Length: 254
Image (cartoon, rainbow, N blue to C red; front, side):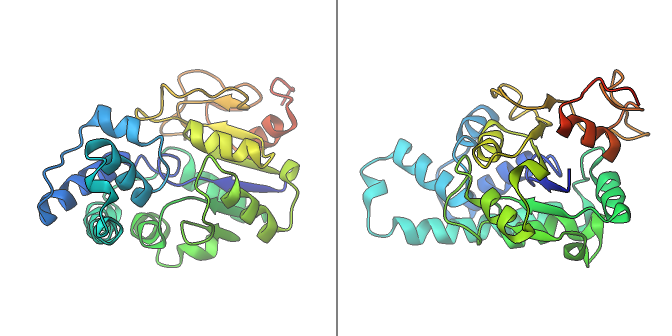
């Protein structure tokens, strides 16, 4: 394993509740009589990308209106307002990173292993989420960052992962991806990248066939796994365990 690639929403942090609140705040601000609840938003998460999600829902709610000439313009405006509301909710460290994330980023940095981001979220959302927990220079911790502005294809298309591989200059077999959703897993698999899954409440019912492992989270000394991890020396995932999982030797002696 020569590089570690992280998804963002649901993987680095459990962001989806904040996104849902931000969407509903944006709807209210522009006067749309939409209000998404958790079951609906869970289903809408199958559509990657906030603007794509808005268009998909509009076509469900009012197919005729969704064909109007101003729909794209309205979606752009609503999404911009939603992004502002999201930033207000997560800035200042209000949304912590999931267990194991900050530790693995630090461990990879100390070992010289490049880490990358492969996400369909926007640069503004990334900055709002990571500036507080990782510092204002958080971008320097990542060798490659590919986001919503990098490629047109959204997950489960492999485009963003292929872009990451190209910029890293590595083969897919040399990398390990960490994802939280079926769409993310399918995107990584389509790019040929072995993947560990850490689902959230929003993605826990997804199918994760072919994942190396499915874990509640990556664990920390302060937030360990309920049980000992295969191939790990502790009840949390460190780089040594990730390397063993990547090789497929889950039960190799430490």
